[in-house]
Length: 118
Length: 270
Image 1 (spheres, rainbow over the protein chains, first blue to last red):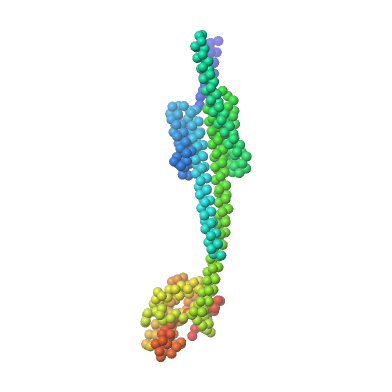
Image 2 (cartoon, helix red, strand yellow):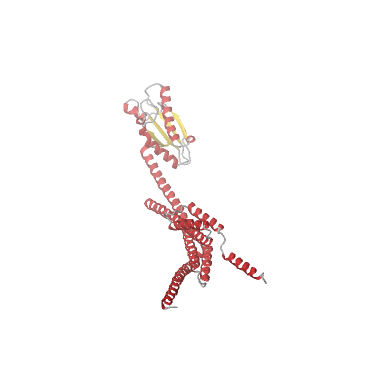
């Protein structure tokens, strides 16, 4: 009889435990990695607005971690990760465009020389 | 409950409803936007080919946002997953553009190599034509097509009196000879030195040989294989003019370059 409320309390506690977000350590690591990778290909906050977003959100996520506000930390870190990946992708696309332009210039020069030679 | 508190309650209720409405509208817009972006990448065959994983993730995040949107009070989660979905769609698009650029660059690189080859061939052709022209020039300028072969004469003015060293004024003609020999890799030459009859026999023989050797040295310095060059000194033998006049003596002081035929056959030495 008297043990029932105890069970109920335990069940409620367990449910609450499930609902609370665990610390998103793995996500923080992933985001950090994505930021480093983006920096490695030359993304920076001045040229890529996405990179600025990523850095700001990651800093706030770390603040949330300190406050144990794990849900906010996870969401901000997740967004920061994708912001960084987008910044990286944009830099790589830009580089591939530059490469194309360079090739086109060289080909134009070759064609001109061939035209002159004939 | 008086009228005032009722009105207040009503106002509070309306405020709540409008707040919820705003949040709901916000998440609804985000969801629609993400859905539209996802639709675009999903229908692009290049994106599907190049970045299928990003498209799948965009779809998964969108489905999650969609599911959450039916729950009460999950507005911020909906916006979050809609945001992730949009990012995945954008990343898929960027990856696709990058790879398409790289594929085009690979094709252009082949084109560039093809053009480079064509240009090299065309330059070679023009130099070969120049070589033919040079040959005509050498034939016209130098010489007599004698029984000794094609003979080119380097006059006395290309050397200082009594000296074996070629003067700088000979550079142009020497470069032409080098070019001619490079374009005709089978041809060989014999370089023959001659003097006039003034001075001692041995001195003349030595001077004629030294002058011929100095011409050979310059050719070798400019990259002609020394195996293709013979050197002879004939002293005052074989004059082309009588040694009686100054003009005749000047003509006799000379270096002659005898070219072989195209197969490398050189006439016998004198």
